[in-house]
Amino acid sequence: MVTSEVPVRARPGMRAWAIGPIVAIALLVAVGARDAAASAAPGSATAARCAHQRVDGGPIGGPRTVRFVLLGSVSCARAHQVVGAYFHKMKTGQCGRLNNFCALMLPGSWYCSIFSAGVSATAGGAMLGCANQRTSARIRVFNVAGGRAAGLLSL
Image 1 (cartoon, helix red, strand yellow):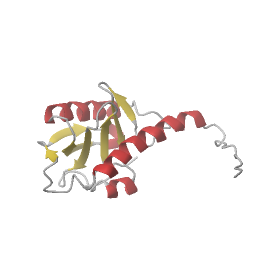
Image 2: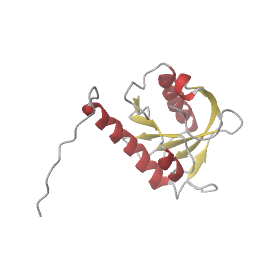
Image 3: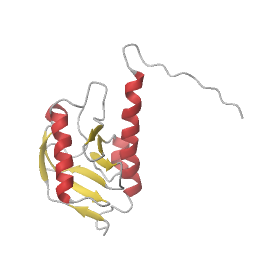
Image 4: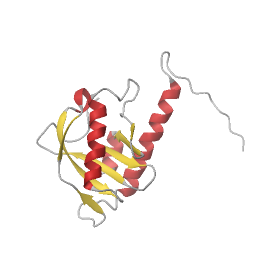
């Protein structure tokens, strides 16, 4: 079987090399969310829930209250720390111009990303998620209704 490769060209002014790592990180978080969807159903013994946290994502996320669903070996304290650091980076403009999903690496081998509408649907409505590259730990983050509209962040 012979396959032909077609070169991928970026639009003028776009850096194609910058998009690859963003897509890879988003897929890492998305696959973890999809794989864990069945085991993290409401009432599941394997999904842990933590106290709500007030965060501010600046112009991207705005101020909001979020709740967590933890998958794997991650504590509520660590989840609050990781998500707080992620929203701080978002608020201080560290997502970058070409990073639509604000896919960011955080200390401790954590990668966080805003979910697309399709991934959010497979992750039980989570608006973003974090995955630890060294372990199977995952954090899914949901908007608490009553603040801004529940669901996805606006970019």
